[in-house]
Length: 392
Image (cartoon, rainbow, N blue to C red):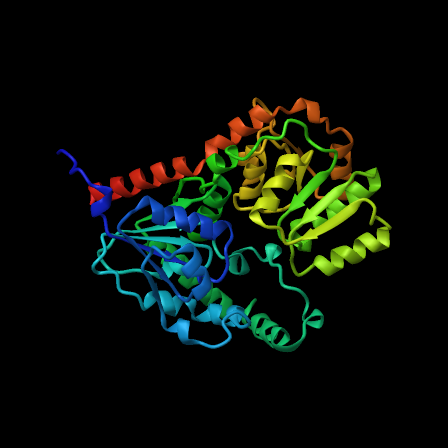
């Protein structure tokens, strides 16, 4: 039987996303899903109006009752408990397909008889991967956050948590198909949801980066770029560079920024480590293009856009051997980075001590990055959706 030909412009797509209140890797991923389907509309539990006006002005955006709740930024961890109800409240009967981009509960959006593809960035870590939780101790918090943490602590490690896990698993199992954004996430989906999934790597704006003026000569300093949080391993980078007197620039902000500054003071490493704070897109491009290497000492990364971006700038990556980064950075041909095997300062020191920038060519790094270009993501997703609709 011949399959019917499907025109992308004719597919009415409901794209469902987690609460939209900031811009980051997930939100960039979302933009390319919307771009892949001209006749798509966006559904989210709630959104920040400024972000929608700036980044999604050409998209029709639907919200739930949560849009009218007060203090959503301060209370977002508490409001997380309402997310499943918000996503269940949507009706998609006039759409051909639902695509949810989930890290928490957007996968709860279902309408009977409508194919639902969940593009899973990761199962919710606060439910399934407690070792990766980033919440601080109650004693370190003040005001409303201290109160919210008390609620969180009461909820976790009880039968309530087991119920939420069950609901989350059932929501995943109701999906027609699940996409994993890396093989690491594919393994989590199988382990936590008992579901098969297909890997499609997230979009990275490689072509945009390749148009940036190329730097012929790298400078003699290392870069950490991302959230300044202890769980990201920033302290390892600081201590290792201090031990070897290697200049390190740290670009980004986060809850542990002051603690990391205190660590630098304690080590007497102000001459070695420089904090840049939040950097603009232009500043990020300049840093990545000139750094000797990007240091990424993160555990359990789902995919990791930053190291691919670094490679697109011709910059090699020094990373902890764990998570999705093992799928993006190559130690073979082309050689685009190197890993340290133990999550210790000494393991990173050993790699930095033996790091030779002449072993890496900018062309090889760029060649590797092109495997994750946004155009590839769009092409694969379009064909994935068309295949599912043709088989129904």
